[in-house]
Image (cartoon, rainbow, N blue to C red; front, side, top):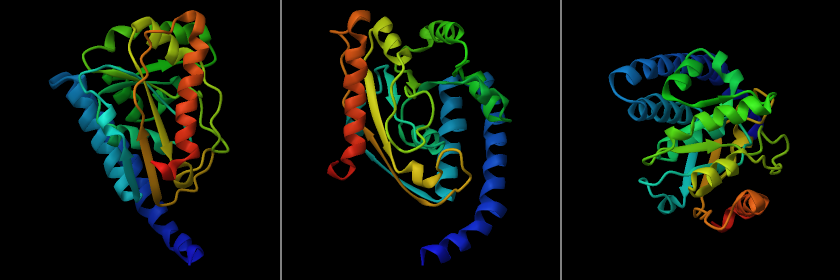
Length: 247
């Protein structure tokens, strides 16, 4: 039965969904640019990001369940850190997290029609991962955007996991949390690697879960014990991956 459903899904994927994904990304990215000028980045981000994400998830189709939404205070800014298994993590976060945030994303995404210009105008933070000094400077320059309930989003592994295992974390997110003295909000996403595995175009329908964990107070952390904060956050996210059914 699974093989039959897979075969039946292919014409839908190639003839309808993929063209829709490309056109909707171009449309909502362009709309975002316009909305930034006539409204503000927060409204533009919701319309151009959250609505775009939800429409593409519904049409994949993918079912998303969210746990722990009560752990978010929408008046509070956070450094949000999340595991990364698929491009669909972006859709889940944008569509279902429900807070205003700015991504820290690789500079290559500037080249994607619609998406690149939309992200730039909203104020997302592009970094060149091959130039550590320039990347840190870009993050430092963006600190004034993380106020009044606007958060910043990191994938601290740096890139998508190839095997589903949680990779080692980089320091950038945690350095920013310590410098800004704002809480770290860990998030675990489960199931997206089965929707669109990394380095493939083998898109399939399915289900995903997003677990929003309790924020971590960084009052007791500084540059000297930043690794403890990193390991604590990684442990929380990993427990979500290890025991998804217990949530």
